Length: 331
Image 1: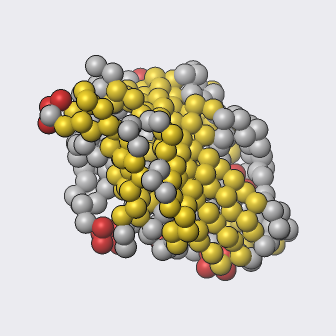
Image 2 (image 1 turned 120 degrees about the vertical axis):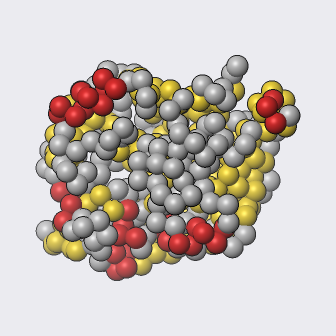
Image 3 (image 1 turned 135 degrees about the vertical axis):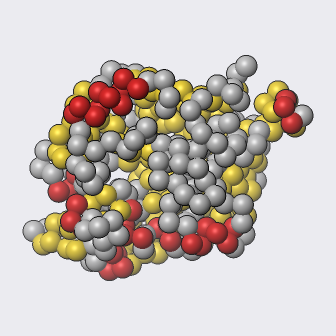
């Protein structure tokens, strides 16, 4: 397993083939890390020190997640009036394709340049209980202080796809709480969940933009708790709706800034929404809530809820999703 480095004058990014993952992001600039007298930030990605540890990772750290991101209730979906059983790895439910999806595969590096890399992966859908074959492509590239990824997936059969990137960020560049991070979320609704974090089919409106901080904005957590059966203590693992399924407008989903480092990230995507996860379940060498993920995606488990619109990918066609992270520094 090799490190693939992308670099320009603003960013240095490390990728690996296993899971087509982002394992390091450094923001470059003369004033970005005065404390350590260097001209680039510490690693803004929460990840393992040893590459071999990614091979046993169960938290999808930095990974391309698919073919089906997030949770599927009872590990079942219906396509063309036929019900299929997915592998269950969260009780009776399926999380991130049951632990046998894109994040657990060795992708091939098919193209590489100084500021871009393209990974490819053939994927047999029977591995997750569905018919057909996929050809997946993930292209990472730099432009100024922006890291982008474009996912393109072709399918031989009608299927349900929901793909994202699961990079864990801590903008302080340290393995510590993100309680100094200020979140600004650009969404109109939040999806309510049951005790197993499965969507109930209901949403409630939220202020757009919505301000959130792990420590100070307890009123938001309290408000959610009154309307949902399950809230992770002191953190969030919920889906926010930014636009209608199928709209595919290029939108800013969130802005996050670390007060201690002055580093901020604006996250953009053509996805209909995002899951905000404040790393409540990290264990081992990582403290819980020492990172955050903003996972651009469609509403999880939407295929099992008639209240939600679902876009299936027909046989012989392609699915696409793009995500971008624009980093900046202010004093």
